Image (cartoon, rainbow, N blue to C red):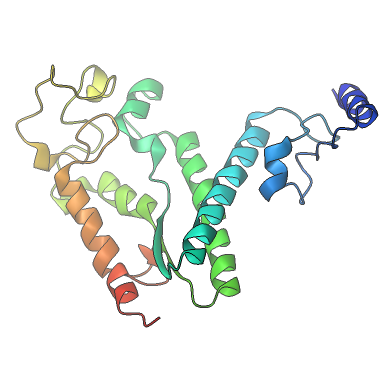
Length: 227
């Protein structure tokens, strides 16, 4: 694989094309990702972990670029939402786990993305002192009621109110499916989306509460930050 990668780099040089940066190089980020990444360089390979790292870096860089555009247009207060626990959606549990528990490796993806996102937001806040950025910790907001549904008034943490198949997680709810009679008791309405009850809980935590649900402050506090 490394020999093939070296051959391709030599061919690119002969054709006057730019060299593709190695995927594991710490400088391979930002705009460099858009011109391609060399997964055949020494110490790397087209592995799940490598591809995941690339994808997370690309997504975070995209968010950073979009925030920069908003800043240049005059935005000074922005709430940025992290990923929810992807492995706890009925669709993923129905697909990967017969015990009904959340899928660990999918939740790890959410955690890795969220960590990279928080790091980027911290760096941007330090660079742009008048740019007030709040990280919305959707991961914890959802995992807490999923882990202890009764504490939040729910009876069903992994079964969707509307759908088809195991846990109603095989297909999205459509006009052909009848929803359950008790949606307020469900965390999820369909195979991915929360119910109105869960969304209202989400709203209250986002607007009124600070860390760890919102970092560094609640949306309510953000509203009153002078600019």
